[in-house]
Length: 125
Image 1 (cartoon, one colour):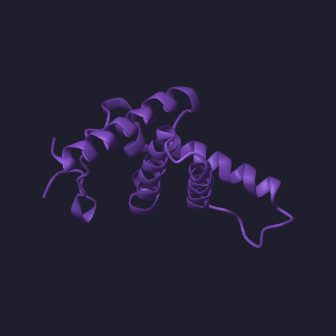
Image 2: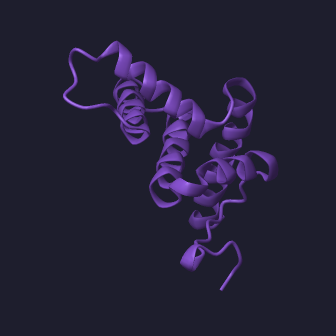
Image 3: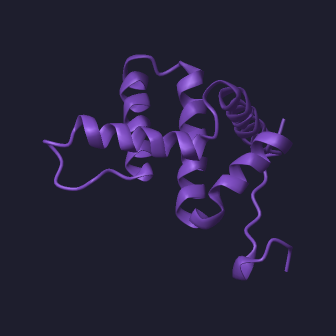
């Protein structure tokens, strides 16, 4: 089998977890905002500025990486990192539409392809 197809399949399989986890935890973007708010309360005496949703994503990826150092064959952690990277891309590139993007992924699933539309348009150029 073509290695690119294998990689694409693994990314798609990992993205399916967003739907499963969304049913348990709700919208991924909103959840990261909630986590950032809680971190800011819990760490308020230790921080010089508030944490953002991206800070939450990077710290969770760091936790997953630390776990992988002990259990490098734990595939769920690798899949989680893929999904956290997707969340970070949504947060960074499409901040104003992030809730809509996540809802569309949860509703329709992710087929392993990402298309970026220019000039804020929702239609292909």
